[in-house]
Length: 405
Image (cartoon, rainbow, N blue to C red; front, side, top):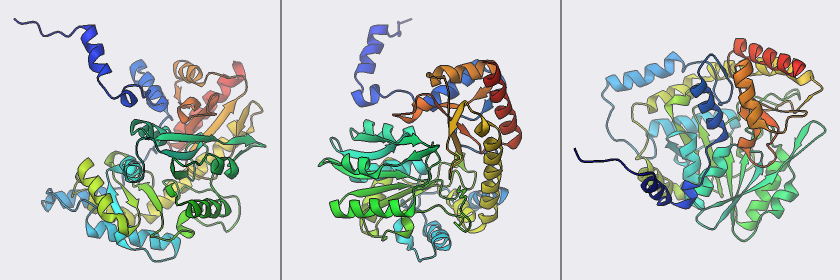
C-alpha cells in the first residue's frame, strides 16, 4: 500500500501558504471558551454566547414547513423575495413611524453576512474603519481578514458608566478612513448611544463623505430607566435619510429566537442595490427560498413574541442588578440595552484564566473580556437571555465563589 501520510513539515508549508491575514487571525475568545467547555464535558451553564433559551416559535417554523410542502426549493431572488422585503419595510414603518421602501432591504445569510456585505461594499485593502471598543470580535476580525484596518477607540469606564468620547472617535479619522461603525445597543457593554450623539456622528460623516455602518441588532432589547422612552432604542433611522451613506446590518436571530436559521438583512441606499445584490450573489447566491416565508411570519406576526423576549431579559437584568450588581468587588454599568452583563471583578487581571477556573470549579461558562478588544482585560460578558433558572443558579454560584476566593 502506498504511503499517504503528510509530514509535519509539509503541514507547516500548507499553513504558511494561506494568506497571512487569515493564517494569523486568532481564534475568537468566545469560541475558545465554548471549546473549553465542550472538551471538558459536564453540565456547564452556557452563558458565553448571545442566545436565548427559547426555540423558534411554532408559527415561524410552520411557515417554512408549508413552504417546503409547496415545493419552494428552487433558486430565487438573490436580494430576497419581494414579499419578505416588503415585510421588512412594514416592520420598520411600524417601529420608526415613517414610510420605508422595500427596495432598501436585502436579505442575507445572517447578521454576519450582512456585516461582511457592508464591509465588502465600502472598504478594501489599506483602508480603515473606526469603531468604539470594547466591541463584538466579529466586527474587527473580518476587517483584518479583508486587509482593512479596524481602528478601535477605547471607551472609558468611569462613575459606573461607559463613556463614548466622540472627540476621540473623530480624531481617529484620517484620509484612509472609509466608515465609522456604531453598534448600539452595544455588544458587550450594553451602552445605548443617545440621539444627540447619533446626530453628531451623522453630521461628522456627512461633512467628510464617510459611511456609517449601523449595527442595531439589539435595538428591540432596550431597558430605559426614563419614563416614556419608548420600546425601541435611539437609532440612526430617526435621523438619517434612506439614500445617504449609511448601511444598517441586522438579523432575525435575536428578536425571534432564530439564531440557527442564519438569516438577516442589509438596509442600504437603493442606488447601490445592484452592487449589494452582486455581493450576495457571489458570496452565497442568496438565502434558501423556503426559509424566507418564515421571516415574513416573524416580522408580521411576531410582535407579541418579541415583547415577551424583551420582558424575559428585563426580568433577568433585574435579578443580576440585585445580586452581582450589589457587590462592592464588582464594577458594572446596568445595561441600557442588548442582553449582556459586562462586569469587572476586583483583583482579577487574567479573564481567560478566570473563565476556565469558573468552568472547572462551579460549572459556569462566560466570555472573557479579552475577546472584545482593547480595554477588555479583567472584564466578563454574561448573557442574561438564558432561562431564569440557569441565570439565578449561575449568579448564585458566582457570588459564592467570590465570597470564598
